[in-house]
Length: 219
Ligand SMILES: C[S@@+](CC[C@H](N)C(=O)[O-])C[C@H]1O[C@@H](n2cnc3c(N)ncnc32)[C@H](O)[C@@H]1O
Image 1 (cartoon, rainbow, N blue to C red):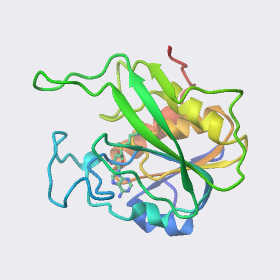
Image 2: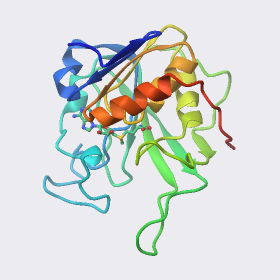
Image 3: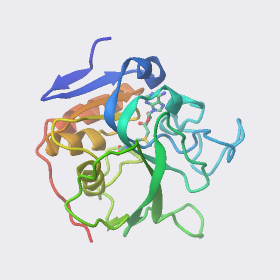
């Protein structure tokens, strides 16, 4: 498999992650799968929820997480209605919340999703790399000019990478989108592998990796 991008310890593969995952391993899995993904029983196959069925938001990916080898930690975002992933060899450790101070509006008046949830898993006996006690939430704004409909705030992802890995370790993101995980990993001196099914987002991620990291405001 030829990488789409490879530089400074960061690699992007273009394609369906299910064709790659069994050949890869990492210290930290940090990913944000399409939220319509059918994990557990919250959604039935064929269900459509409000986000529609854009290609970046597909949900035919049942079982992807069973193909992952994460040696130490995992952080997996999920829809509020979703049932969390289960990861081979890891156990659920905590719940992390991403609180957006500028959540995007919904088409109709209702609650807007200002909070996203991330399940944190760990293997037995792994080390915590945070600089001290870390609140299990991040509060701050989403990018005002996102390069992907589901782009995560970079500062939040930098925080997670910093707590859950150390310099030189391998971070894996099978659902790269605009490459936020890869940019965070690079900025902290981690190696990283990302996979993205849509070529246009491989290009967006590669471009972001070529730019210097702009640390935005948070908290
Ligand atoms: C929720 S988005 C990730 C957004 C990312 N966290 C960011 O900050 O930009 C999920 C991404 O997974 C991609 N994707 C969907 N199915 C995939 C598959 N089978 N293999 C690899 N990528 C896939 C979608 O194209 C989409 O860009």
